[in-house]
Image (tube, rainbow, N blue to C red):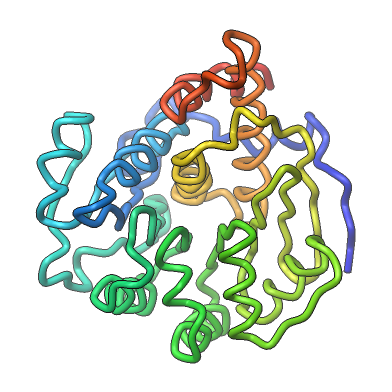
Length: 288
């Protein structure tokens, strides 16, 4: 395994999407955010707004019918629809000149059978890079889920998983993985699921089974419910703009950590919220 301590600022700068003078909302990347059950509509709001702040040209949210008015009122620039009768045509297809990606899972109830089935259906049907987060990771931690992930890898469709420690433990149990450290766990999960794994924590590890990058500039300001949804939106937006999935994961995690530091420079870490974190994304990008 090729262990890389971190990306240099020069490397990170080279990955930030550059705007063409003839760009439009579709050439800048379409991101579909399948998120937000009735109980957790805020997760869809945070992921989608973070994606907008991270450069995606067109952000569409597909959520629980009861969550639709909540998300619509949160950001009028978002395109919002219900996930009832989800069809293949509702999911993005990445094409030359029109990159796209999908986020699946923020605000999903991992114990809800319908949510789990929806997550697997969406992951199976999406013909574009996909990021799996939140409750959808519980669906992935099954024989069927792992098979879908492996099939995507064989088809050349990038998949990124963004588990915290508890979610990573469930994924590891399903794949019969035992690891002695977080870096090893990230690497073994990546191999088992054929995916890029972003193992979140005080230090975050990004692995694809061959490479490993550590992001060590996090802050306790990020230790609050909702900041993971922000990270999903940031990484998903970069993927939607055509950034390689591993590079998008590293750049997104670095910018997420640096946005947390930007929040901390303006207020006590104790007081920072996920909404503050999103508002700090421009400062993090600008500092590069």
